[in-house]
Image 1 (cartoon, rainbow, N blue to C red):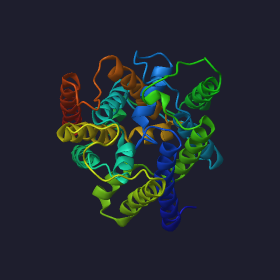
Image 2: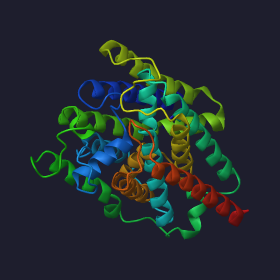
Image 3: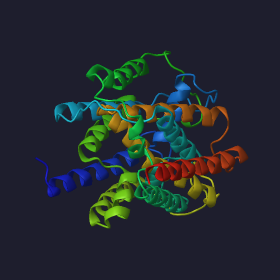
Length: 359
């Protein structure tokens, strides 16, 4: 049986592992300050499958598949694999889409924001402020009476899905992983971010380890910020500190730490839109019941609602590249700004409407 001290040790271990492996993967070949980034990995993987036309973003990231498979192995080993569903498919797909849209406007998911900060990239500061604000707004909406996933119970399907159905995402990840090691089976960039990657075996090993650890601990960056706002306890602070300290230490040791706001790799200087993009991620994550990374881990546990959010994330990864919504080092395109504002308005409208229906 778990206890508070054991839980804290698992969370601290997971945070430290995430920070250390994020730094190590960047050192071994992943894009600078981007050793782990769910939105970037999804955009690369969507490109490898031919789902968008950007030839510079095509590479099936083994880490991404490792997160899901490692989670599934740990859940099965600890008897925590629980097939379940209860939500509205359209809303869940929308939450996933908007999390990737917000991440693309910042150029990175919450994990990448943490890793960028640990590398001395001060452009991540407004992103963290926006992420925290989005989480705070989401919690306020939930407190009003059940917006978000909890408020979708009226559309829930009775009972639990068959075990084999819940294992579907795991089987798909295993099949894609096999293709990743077959030369020429998938598209692969020869330049740009998609061409930068650590050795496949190392990437896969890191993904499996983090998937297993974070399934056991429930750790994620957004979840820690949410818990901090809810409980004001030191546990979330300690977990985030462990991740930051581990990444910063390895960055300093490997020469990847460079403190500053200007001339950071893979960033832009439009701080307002970095903040708004991550506010969109934080708000959608609270309503969906977890950030992009957490959704992948939950899908590995048999949560088909998380699988639907994952479908939305893949759709988002394909469309932000196809429609040119994502930011580049030159800044945020007008279409991305409009989409971000529309996304924030849609989530606020959804949350307020659900709260009124249950009020």
